Length: 174
Image 1 (cartoon, rainbow, N blue to C red):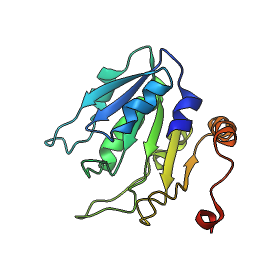
Image 2: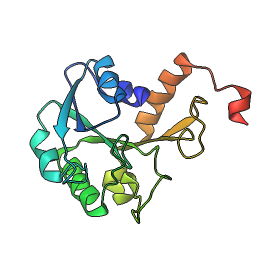
Image 3: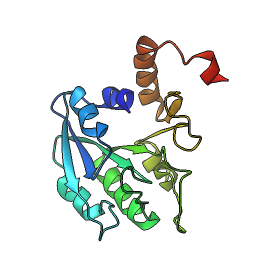
Image 4: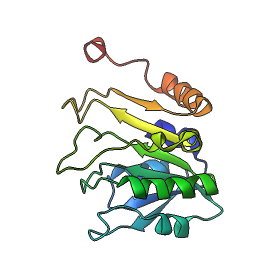
């Protein structure tokens, strides 16, 4: 998440974060010099940001939106129709979508997970997926994760990562 935000955001940018959210999101945004813009969601809304609220939060400074589905801390899963509406706004307004999909395998009660990037080629070209093994495989602390992103963003993330950490330890790699 940190590398993706650093690769995409600069001081003065704004990053939309639906609330409630994982506690580190806003701090990670602030580390880039960008400003987190919190948009409230409610239990009645399934703790899912609506396309209308997304559109209303966008300014000239909006660079990126952070989505988390299934969500930490609510467990909310975005319905496909809502994701499609968010995708339409992101494409129209040329907003990058940082899709935290770390809980994609932890779905209950008949909900269905759909990756944000799977909503079409235009959506895929502005989506960064972040995922890893810590939640689905109970490997918290191992720090094994990955991103799927457009080539230019992946190159920037790789450049950052190569200077921050050489590699995961051999036990984690195995």
